[in-house]
Image 1 (cartoon, rainbow, N blue to C red):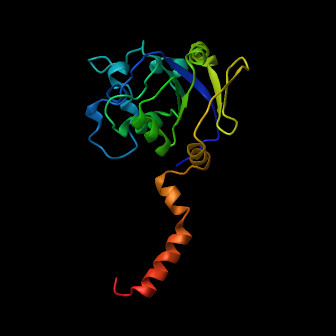
Image 2: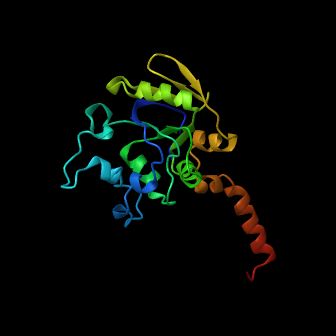
Length: 201
């Protein structure tokens, strides 16, 4: 998993509440267990018209936001089913950070396992960030995980909080496998000792 230390990029505004995982990645795209290639299905029902053509009114289809790395969204982001394809689709599109006032628990935890930083801010700070994100190509935010700060295009700063363990994992690029591999020497020692004392096992 890639480390997340500091991210600077275009932020796309999506001021919609209760965006569920089916909206993030519709069920038609759940046939694969690969983490790649899902970016094309991100918000598919909003990004594409019924005939398959691009919906030019959807924010991520607008030229200024097609390479967005940050999403500023409404309350209760990621609710609905627990599909892990939702963070996979965001990541494959290029989104590495989602900012909202709240997240569904399962989606929130899945983000950390896939290298996406979900940031919780106050309603007042969200309004400020949505205003910043509304600046099109000038909607540049910097999310600094080391200092727990978001810097807007005008230089204003917003602080946020994050559990120390989750912050450690993101800063060091540690998913569940990475955390296990940190203990590899202890695991090897145990297995050698166990093999010596229980050779029949």
